Image (cartoon, rainbow, N blue to C red; front, top):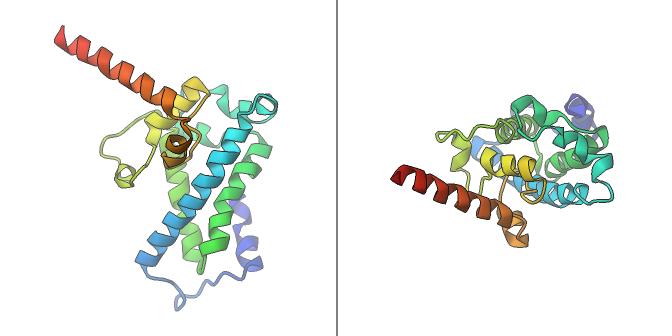
Length: 184
């Protein structure tokens, strides 16, 4: 889908010129807008892909790996790539006023996707500065449990609909076990 971005920019007449390029603050705000739109799309469609009647036909391919790693982020059924990938382009259609936003958004989205599938929760990761960012620990639980934590970037939809409850119970249990081990 990324290879088709040239045709996408031509179809929607997205400018390339240096003179039309927005300031970096505007690009950052537009990327945030794209992230909110994509995350909303992803939450609801990802949750639908986990429905018992369709899971085994499409999304099960992505869940072949219960311990995610970076390259596995893009391992999915072609239908899933199109379904969830459309959320990426909706934000661009709403906010894009220059090709630089498209490339900034592509870069951010790929880095975020690889991060949450990396299997590592690096404490100094700059993505953790983003409020409500889920990160790898949040998404690793989704791959381990298959239920809940459906969001791609932020945690608010899962919190709002209670689909992160098992994650919090699990984290509390792990924290309590670690306290017991430290006391001994």
